[in-house]
Image 1 (cartoon, chains in turn red, orange):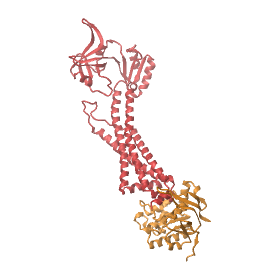
Image 2: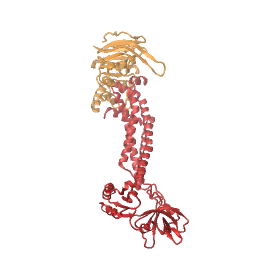
Image 3: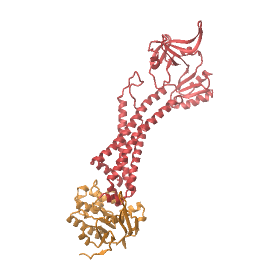
Image 4: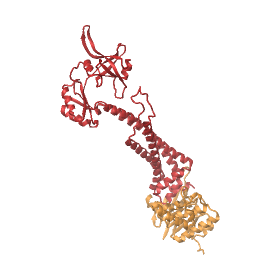
Length: 388
Length: 231
């Protein structure tokens, strides 16, 4: 072992027997470990929720073709054929959507909604609908109850123009997901066409892909086939504002929680500065024996590195361990009536853990630089003279 | 050839209070191979002079040459290397590092020079044996008696086989018997290794046993007194 780490490690080992230095060194390591653990757990929590959101994004359509101008597709069959020819595409379906009002059967509570057609609804015994929880709550209508959906379209009746309306039985109340921007009602294609009056054609076409990661390539194929009259969007583009918000959220959390690591770094500065003062005489003696200022600086940088490595390793072990335990045993439950998930999810990504560890290490060693440079500048003669 | 040549040295300490001028216009020289003593009352700058000669402090003005090398002209790195290779220090309070064993303390100069730990410790063992402490190598420095600590400090100062040994009151903290032992050891090692040795002491009896005696006072340092050969 080189001279500098040999001295630094012995100082740390010996300082355990000296209570005040030992306490401050332990506090430095503990502070750094807590900061690292806090950052890892925070990011794991964020990733846990964001994973769910990403999964929700992928549960929906991966490609959407809508008209570049206007509300309806000019040539729906051509769009459908173009989508069907995309390698790996499945579930190609027409989208019919519109806006209207939903109310309970008595018409006492109503609210504006967006409706769209969705597969899996059985209209054999009359129109059915899936409503999300916020709609169900506002119009006081649960599963099995009948709601009235009114279109913004009107028709003429013997008593004059009245809105087109459909009474539908609530087949299912879905929990409000992170992706739901507005209150939404899903109905069968026939009901949607009835409400919009679009008996043929479609407002848009959607498809799913076998590999959502290749959405950009698939979009390029469709764009080449259809030209500029159509707007081709991948699931990434459809969710771009949300994806940006998720990235921003992660950056803000990182910066905020990283402040704990910076506070721990200040503690390292004071710890090493204290050791420099305590070992001032030793510095003088080392210099008298021929140690260069660089050597003296290295002793204290090694101290910082040891504190940094120990604190970071402890923090990584604690943070990763805690996150995995919380995820494995679902230790933070959530009421399933309110949330889409039954527990607070945690997801640990090695790349993020490595980034946190690197940040903590660089900060710790950077913190040691200041007192280490001060130690290297100490006049050895003065250090010996004053420590008699 | 001159081992040490100092010309017109001035040194003032500027601390929190008023500046204290330790000496001004001090000149000193010593030939190679001489065992010299410097005496004088406390506060006249004997230790400061040793620090300036050893290059661990810098004079405000004047110049110091050691074996023809001007210390002022060396970079901090080269000055450190020069100290490591050619100068050994023994301090009044031994200044052994308490976290390390006697052996590790003695091995430090070699380790600073870049020797492998095993080689440095092997050389340190031989030095400890030479100062009569072969059995005490693995004891903590703080577990040794005052005389033993000072002998370890002497062994450490000799680790790099220096040409110049600067000893700042090495017996000042010891009882009479231990002081005699340490002084005798210094004389033996001086002769064995053909070093130049400068010993600061308050003990006139020991000073009389050196080759030369310098006396420092507020007015400066007296010309060298060549003492008669003992024997």
